[in-house]
Image (spheres, rainbow, N blue to C red):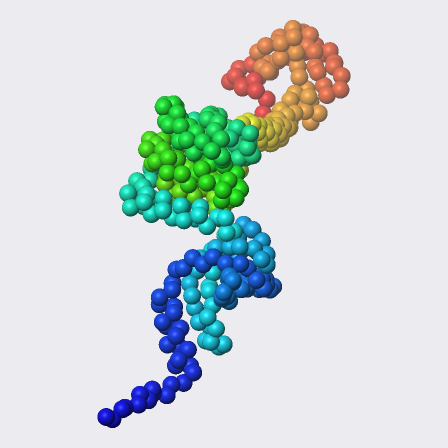
Length: 412
């Protein structure tokens, strides 16, 4: 009987590790591992390195910075935890390691399992479906709040709303937010605010805490109350890193109660900002129009004559006319004066006195100028006017009485 020996093919280390890496990483993509922390190291990179072990075995683990910063506790050596992640092979050393995505103290493991059971069941029923999410009202007038009356969450909500939504009514339905019976109270508070017809939107939540503190918001009764609400619900449970079943069912999830208050009046704030922008644009437009009108007015002022300008022009015309009149009168007077001098000269030349000065005399008889011998008789007394003085004469003889009458006008 012949026996055949199996001779395996020779492979390189890289090929072997690669095959193991493919086998492991394809089959262990999402595992929950419980163990004790050992050799916890957090270098300056922010990554978290540690060993997870139990009484019989151990495995190296790495949690990268993006996940490590979400931890709500500080991992310590010797602490029992439950890690969720994927198994990988670190090829450079051939080491098997667990890449951790989530880590919780060991006591939280049962809660996480319960969370997953509720989440999967409600997800199958479609309670998380996007199409079931109700839109928030644009301008709510009454905002309902389901939370503890003594907690900081309600005060944070009030502070935001008072600052950003003046005139909005806030209606508190006080409930316990943790402990036995808290979930039932929260569900009842949601139902009560639905019966209050003035409520436009509702905030359901509380401040931060441990998973145990927040557990009431993972209860199925709260989830179904939110799903049945006719009023849009904003969940605001814990901090940004906390995710509850209520967050998944609600119409909108807010990271914190303060941010929930901001979200509920977001449209109002957007409208106010829009109005502010419109006011700025209107102000700029009005200033532009005023500047344009002022420029036009200045131009008209320059082109428009003063009301006194026509009077000033008329006064100037009157002054010019008066000047011309004075000049005309002066010229006319000069011409008349010259003419008068001419006439006076001629008159002087023709005056009897001038004739007398040339040696002629005027003979008067009974105060009548004697121009003819027929006007006198012998022995008549005559008065002779000379250029200088007068003489009395007596006619001794008259001659030339038979001659034709002569013109009495002296041709001197």
